Length: 155
Image (cartoon, rainbow, N blue to C red):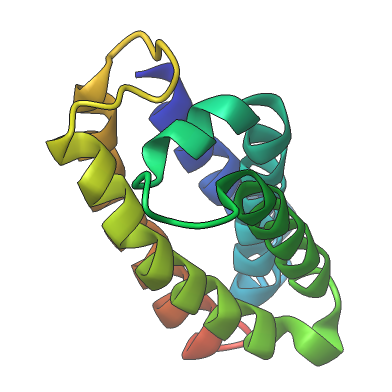
């Protein structure tokens, strides 16, 4: 259960800290800015996961998928690219849309792994963790869409 909580903390932490700072100093909170920062932190975490748990992530892919190892590394690089773009104001909206697309495209892999009892390399929760990832991905999509893509710049 630590991993989903860590992801949610990385996602919401920058906004929560900025909110507390704005409340104590009476300054205006830029919600989108810190929502982007949180999404970027989450994507950096995902990148690390692809690099540290590479073999476990390869096992999550169906055997008929070609170049599984390369796909895991490429998806990790894509996540790193998105994490960086989320920090650059000029590219933030595009990066948030890319994040949503990535979540949608990766969703079937998580469902496949959960249905086939692939527990992400000995994750302490086993396949149940993969079922937790489905609602977590919905939270991440909602965050990216409502707070980043459609969000008001100031709040």
